[in-house]
Image: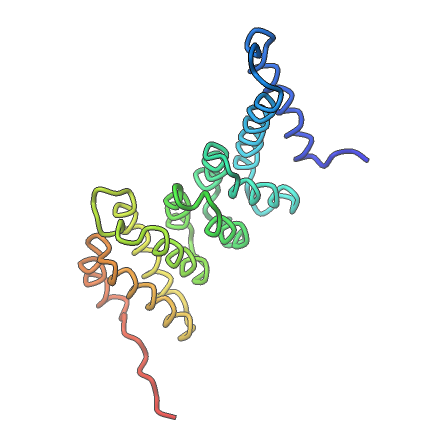
Length: 217
């Protein structure tokens, strides 16, 4: 049985990495295990680059599965290459790729590259409230107090996430979803996310950010 296309590309990239990295002179004193590890990392990064360029609604399920796997790779360079999918994606296609977005949010790549997805979602004509809410939940869990400290990257990402939360709130008609989104807005305020109180204050009048009153049963 032949290899699936993504596995074939990775295998070819692995062998090419050996050819580039491991000449006879380069391999002096290098164990086979280390050489294999180096080649495998380069191969996965190369595959991630290829899949990232081709992310879209027409991507075959097996290719999406490989990209999702590479979001969670143990190698930081592979994670970075896979996350670049959100640099290049046609933002109008994102609503059809909710599974990819959620997998990225849950992955190792999210901690260093959350901003890539945020900026892609900002360009999209509309976003799933559940994707935005899950993004905010994971951001708060990962960033914590860094979201309120201008010395950290996370503080700079607060404005992007704020815009996404407030737009998702305005775009959904579901009171349950609005309540869940407001919980994330409250969470941002609790960690004193950088300039978040001012930002929400400016938007509150326009988007009518008031929780529906609870009715007595």
